[in-house]
Length: 225
Image (cartoon, rainbow, N blue to C red):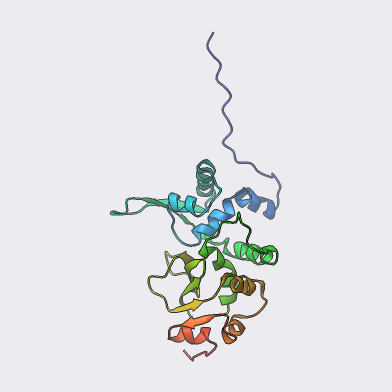
């Protein structure tokens, strides 16, 4: 007698099956790790190995599965870089980028309970970008701000991302219009709205380095266009 094959597993993703916009959104991004993958891809195109390195705790199987789901859901795409890179990268679609306000709101909501860093907590400098973006949101000048923390360096773009670039990026910027030096606690306090960017600069909690219109605005000396 021929051996029976086990029934094939359904490839249909889990759904709340509710006619509700919130439920539909959670069908796409409610799985564990998905929003954190979005956080990483907001920094721009990333290789799988880079994503895995900056998402400590995720298994390779889960990461691959989430990325596949994000591609199928229209949140991310994968493309091959031209030589000499010869590597594939993942990047957010326009719909994926639309999650920036969601991530920013979650960061703001979670900031009051983050407390002190636990011994088991991983940390990456660019994870401070979301709370800092809230404080930089009032800037009118478009440019790149390089941020120096004890935890490392990252850079953020004011006035919206340039075409093909992320909202923020890990490491120093190729070209920075301004540089600021602060610590993680100040960054989180800015995200909580405990003081403004101008107040932090004025009382010396943030050091601004450089010159030009964006530097002037960061220092509170707004210059006319």
